[in-house]
Length: 303
Image (cartoon, rainbow, N blue to C red; front, side, top):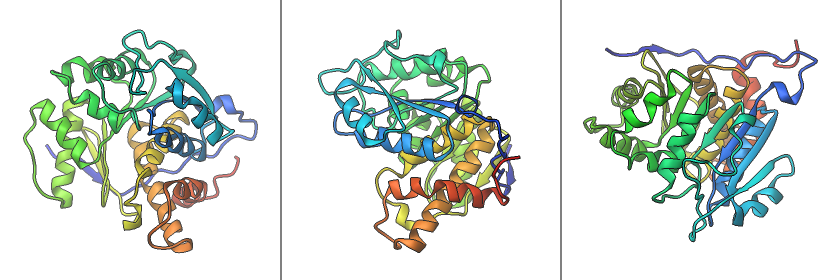
């Protein structure tokens, strides 16, 4: 059965004047590895610019000082690491305080190792709130046999959003035994995302030109953004933004639609004010507050 297509982009709800930082989301980000500290930083920037009240980055101990100095608004926590500077926490999730978080984002810049699939799967199983899985979070999971039975079904209906690019989507589908699909038109991309959304019982954000968001029942095709976004770090910013919106109470489908649309609008602002190419992922992050206001179609302000 095909999903119901919608063109609506939900607004970011206005905040009450008495709102404090503890009420608008505590985002825990598990990201980064030696040589990939920027992925953790950009994800955190996306979360901060997306309105998260508190952002804490969990990363390998060797890059923790780099992440910490990059942005004074962040909190950082060092994690055990392997000889190659990748996170080395297994089922015990040593050093990760899941009880603190409202939402968890995992994957940007993690790299791949024999222990990381267990780490990612444990987060999905153990955390009661919304989880966003991106990049190497997905690549590590795709190496597991019986991915659906061993991972997605452990979520028991809790909000789960994955953000694959086409290559990551192909690996996930192969691991799930879903047939490959060729083509880049909207119909094929909706089918790619929807079939996996049904398979895993989750929200899929299939990134690319005209990013597709799909749940088992509904789908959305994004129309904002431009070709200048074809540069490193853009997906990391999107992951952080999405986590921030989930932390502010939006559902997986609503948060994903607003995130991809606002992310594209922020890039459109960069294209207009900086140049069609050469603007950076951090420039997009800096334009997110204005883009969220534009996407919300009303003064967000305070109610």
